[in-house]
Length: 485
Image (cartoon, rainbow, N blue to C red; front, side):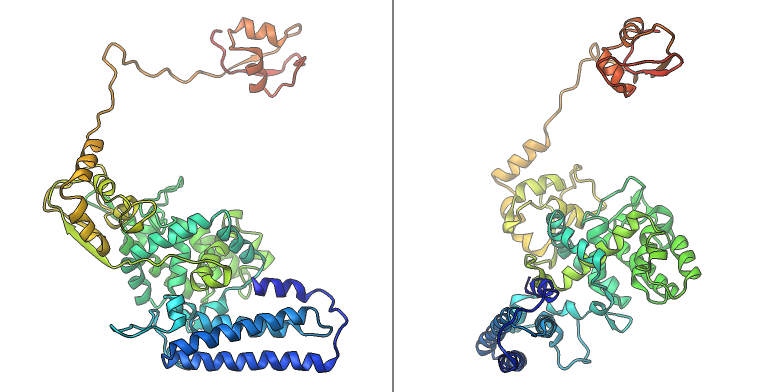
C-alpha cells in the first residue's frame, strides 16, 4: 500500500518547504534505516530472533515515516524512497535467505529442528523463498512486467476473485506433494504452476470446460494425448494431478524452447494455441506479447489469460506486499484403510469441519482420489488418500458413532419416483413457426389466429415495441409460444 501511495504521489508537484539541509538530513535518515535493515537481516541469519525482529520493525517504521515526510518536502526524490522500500520488501520476502545473492537457493524454507526457533521473517511467511524462483537462470520476479494489464489482473484477484484465489491456494497446498515435484524436475518455478492452476481450474481436479478442456491444468483431449494423458480403464488421466502437472511441465519446457524462453508467449500459446502464437512470433521475431501488433491480434480471452496467470504467480511469491495472507496449510499426505464401507461423500459428512476446514473436506477428498466416484461406497479395506492431519479424525468420527449414522442415513436417502401411470414423456420443445404479415393484420389478430399465449409474448419474441406494435406487409414474424396453425 505504501508503494502504491508513493507512486501516486511521485507525479505530484513537490510543495515548497525546507531547504537542502532538511533534504540531506531526510536522505541520511533513509540511508541509515537501510543500513539498520541490513544489519537486522544479518542478525536473522544468525538466528538472533528477538533482536532481529525488533530491528526489522524499527527500520521499516523509519522508512515509512521518512517517505511520508518526503511527500511534503520540496525537491525530495520520492523514487529513492520507493526503491529503498521495495528492496526491503524483496529481502523480507526471502532474497537474503541461504546466503549472499548468487548462492544456490532451495524452494523450501530452512528446516528447524526441535527446540530451535525459526527466523522471524520465515515465521511470518513460511514460503518465503518462493520469491526467488528462477526460470532458465533468471529471477521470475524480473520476468513479470508490472504493466497495466498485470496490475489490473492483480486488482481482479484481490477483489472479486479473492475467494477463488484463496480456495485455489488451499486446494493447491493439499495437492502440492503430487504436482510440485513434476515442476521441480523440469526446473520450472512453482509460482507459474500455481498461477496456471488458479486461472485454469481454481484447484478443482475434476473441472471440465464447455470446450472440453479437463483436469486441474485444463488439457484439451488432443494436447493431453500428445503429452501422454490418455484414458485407462475408463479413467481420464487429465484428472490425475501428478500426470497433468508432468504433462504441463513438458508442454512449457517444449514451448519455452520454441519461443526463446519468452514466458508470456508460452502462456499465450497454452491458452490460444501454439500454432497461432507461433505464426505471430515468426512474423515478428523480436516482438513481445505486449507489443500491440501481437497483443491486439490475440483473442480477448488470451489477452486476459496471460496477465491473470502472471498476477496469480506474483501474488503467490509476494502476498504480503498486497495485504494478502494465505492460510497455513499442513498438506502432508496421508491415507486411511477403510474399516467399514464408505463413499467419499459419507466421509466428507462425518469428517465435518475437522481441523478448522471452513468449507469441509469434500473437494480435498475428491482431488486426492480423482479416480473414485464420490457417491459409490468403497469396500472395507480400500485405501483412501487424505491429508495426514485427518487420519486421527477418521478414526474418531468415521468408524462408529453418531456422525457415521448421520452420513449413512443421508446417503441412503431415496428420491421419490413417479408411478407408471403418471410417468409421461417430456413435452417436446415447441416449434417456432413463422408468419408473413398481410395487409390489415394486427398483432392481436395474429395472436388469436394462431393460438399464441398472449400479445406481449409474441411482441417480445419479435422485438416489437408497444403500445401499437406497428406491422408492415411482408414482415416475417416468429410465432413463438403459439399453439395451432
